[in-house]
Length: 611
Image 1 (spheres, rainbow, N blue to C red):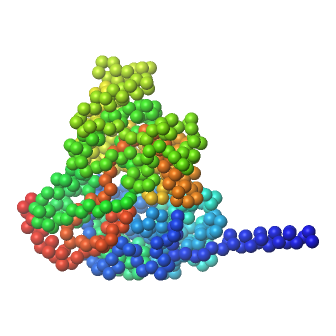
Image 2 (spheres, rainbow, N blue to C red):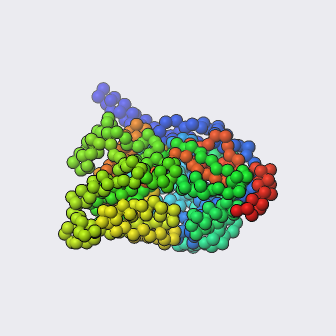
Image 3 (cartoon, rainbow, N blue to C red):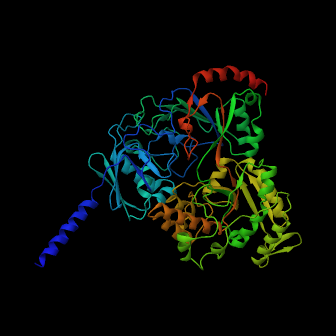
């Protein structure tokens, strides 16, 4: 009689093992909640499935390029090169955290969440007609992690094994079930040809067009000056639901310009077709031209629900000058956003205060509930203001009078060991004057940086503003060779593994990582890891707000500003779907109206002559 429970227990164990090894195959995957689109969906809601194909769309790029391999740290990759490579899945741009199969026909997440199986479509092909195989996927994963940009090591760090399963399956096995985002992250991986790269050095730059699989392939290049892509006429995925209504333009071309000012003039002269504007001054006054007045150029502000991320003057914490948080807090008083917004930005912007502004993820007020519980674990390791005071950058009245702010700044600097001697601020111990360089890549930022420089001079600080060319700038940022620079960190609705590369201690020592600030904080590291393990949306929001609050009070950047819309100018020969995607501008859903194109081209020469 006593053996019956043992037999029963063994049966239960066997059933549990069987259940853990079985999973329902799905057409997509959502991090939290249900998928919006069912298994029989025909297309995304934000496309026009009947959009005509044809025509050309020309863009501007700034600087130069010297490689067609965008996956490694060497070189500057050509703009648009990502469109030549297909990925296992495609992100839905009207859901916060959903992916649908592209190269992958089926996705099977194990019930224990310790592995995911991607089954490839039989019809998935490279541009030379060869099939995409599990061997290609495995080779791509291993090569990106070993030789690719540092972010791949951060993204894929918790993958312990990748192996072929069956004829067309690839199973990714994970260190634990805590990294909920990881099954989808591996789905965003491009699939590269193992056969093509055998005998080639993947780690080097190249101007030989690599074998791709995407909707476009390279038609021609003028090294460093332009690159042209042509839509693949027999693209293998053209009729898939994730592709229908997208990639409508036949030819995409990028022309390179020395700087944004020249590029804007080229746009008004009709030398390219579409331009996303990030300068409020340009948006307000820079497009005035006969073409705009004649209605040939259209300007649209397309609202979005995308978290704004963080842009600001970023400190290089590797510099001894910026290691004291009181110094970093003090220098923020030199940026008079209210004056700049009024006099430079046409009151177009909102001040950024969070790394996740324009979303529910932003930390506001004081921590409560689960967020407070999370932060309590770190009490004594983080500033006490985290618990008592909502973070806000210094505010002024817009008049340009910032005396109170300068007094507050000098008080902080004095506490940190800096004193006025003559008209200079010097270190009490070493006598070293307070001076540094603000590195810029766009001349447009000079009008923002120069008033900051003047305000710093009033504190006795010598800040040199230096603008360099994009190639030199990228190299210096990759090697962390700067004092202060304009930095930018994007944000998603479901942040996760990318945060390791942006703010993690390991990435701070990896040249080419996104942790250009050099943040090394055990608290930040732990918050990132706990955020990645979040079991549900509510937990993710609480952990993200906790991380946001700690980053805010680290004073790692002097926050800039943001706008909750895409500003797009274009020659009026394009049409777009009635519904816009929530989280992207969706230019790949636009199409050319041939009648409008004829009209625009007929009138273009006439109005351009008037400029």
